[in-house]
Image 1 (spheres, rainbow, N blue to C red):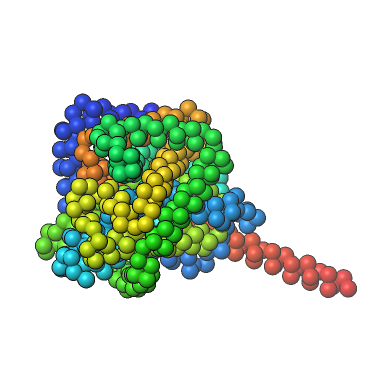
Image 2: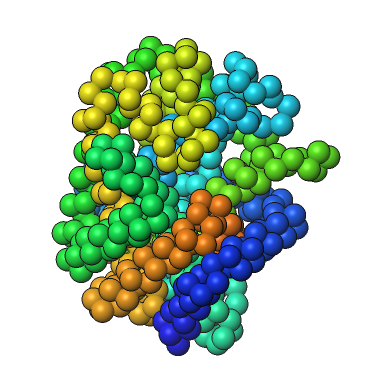
Length: 511
């Protein structure tokens, strides 16, 4: 039932976009306005609460508990684990926005900062760190931790609905549980489709930049079709082959592009920007986390922060389930450190390199990146590369990285969607992977045709709102089961010590 209803609802979305794209776009805009007006604050509070909750778990008495039990060992090495986390969790977005977002914030900074000023430049990197740092990974981590604990330590099915059983009991076996699972599938499919749409836009820009291929709707649909074939091939080969190999390839390509920026870009400026921005980020974290503009009704927070938080929430079922699948054998503290801190730090370095280079070029007059941004955010990266040595080679590398991230995100998502629609099975049937792979491509194509970049943003924000409520409930449910586990461990330890003392007492009497 979950599989059929979720697939039918996505099919209706695709049909509506095919028959009446203008009406779909208008409906999305209206729903987006209502969501931001009445629930924007809720996104900020939910994500801030999740970050605080994970910090508490990291320092709590639960931190030494191990996913899978005391004797469980990690399935993947640490480098492969980090590569899989990073490829699934960020991927296309980092390449798409790495240079474009700081340039956008430079021209249109948050309220109260003068455009094109030194303050705007500082804020542009600080908010890029904020949008791609601890907060998104906290959203992924809390759901991934809950799924991993319930699956490996309690023998649960791996469905999102199972995470609510400690709070709702047998109620979750009825329609409410099915509704939660359907909601998770829809959020995942739409969230990933949003990223695939971004990827298609920027791969098209790269192909145009390198080979002169026209940037038309047909070209973008063709990119999605080619990627569909590639990620279906990867997904059907299994977790230990296609996804694992592609994740490692992603890291090699990403680190190569990052190194190229560090070597050929303004190296000293990049490291100075990284250091100063990291300090500003940590110093201003609470204020940025809860910032709204109720008195001026500005739209900057909605356009950026709320969009990102909603996008990450819509990705949470997919990334959380994938992280849970590959994290057996890690302690809770190791899991939080690995999922929260390491990828966030790599994101900081990435934005300092790509965003710092873009800002340096714009402020020094090396190129007009604002004009490039006005043509489309996907254009900025390739105009930055034009200023650096080996421009064509680096453009090819960036395009290859985009395609690799595109395929990895999509094949990981097809695996997770198939798992969620197969009762949480770790090895779902191949035909379901194919069905979900085609569905994701269709939704991405329709969102692109219906509203382009704005359409992708709108659908991500709208689809994430009900799932934000689920995330809050998951936090309380996880805390309850961890307390039960800690009580059980303490009871067993006390019983063992009592038995040991009794045995020693008996032995001393015999002697």
